[in-house]
Length: 295
Image (cartoon, rainbow, N blue to C red; front, side, top):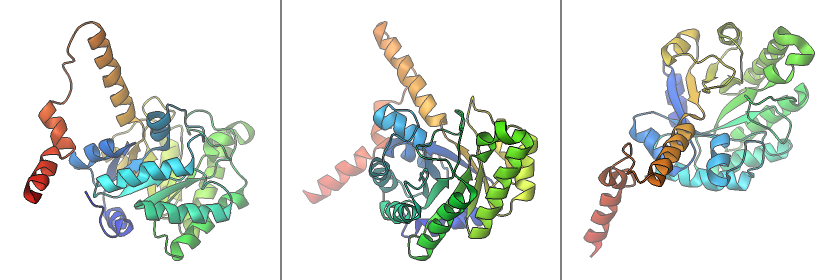
């Protein structure tokens, strides 16, 4: 499939709707196509999932920007729905952030998520200990906004991990105050979507929605530190996007582990796609039709 000519415009049109969009996160072309065929209007390429699926590594900054771009090109080329890419910390200073923006745009992404962790970063639900200073965090988003003006037209998702990083030094409320200050600053700079990572309660999520202007994203990680709430409830709270960062990866890993166990015990796995369904998923019949017409 071919992505739409202006994927960022497509994504902005979705965000302009008065609804809360469910956004299962993918990690390769096949998982992205499954999201699209299920009828979801957009997806997100999860850095955790790419690190796990591509290299069998933890989400601790070990995957390079080159690897992320390679994965992203294949993924974006496989679907026509908008894809947001995980830009981590921007991969360096302000100049690196701008180059990352242009590279993500060229790869076919509709949006990019940028965060304020120090490098190397880590999954936000695994004990983030440190974020960059306010001025550095602001420089990152400012650089991204400037790159957007220069032609790297991506929807900017600005994330803060200050809620986790400052919990011990500032206390629970102080850490949330700092996180909300940063998100308000990101919104004033021109970030399109604001993302408070790892709030600990529904009350904290409501404060985020009530105090931070603009479009807001919730992150529903099974087994994480944030309460798992239904999309309708999140929409009523004031969220516009609901990401499910590891649901597809965890479900796929569980199914593969079960299938291997079945095979070891001489059983044919029962819960899997049929061969015809699998062929349809990768457009096998369409390929054969195209080849036969050329002959």
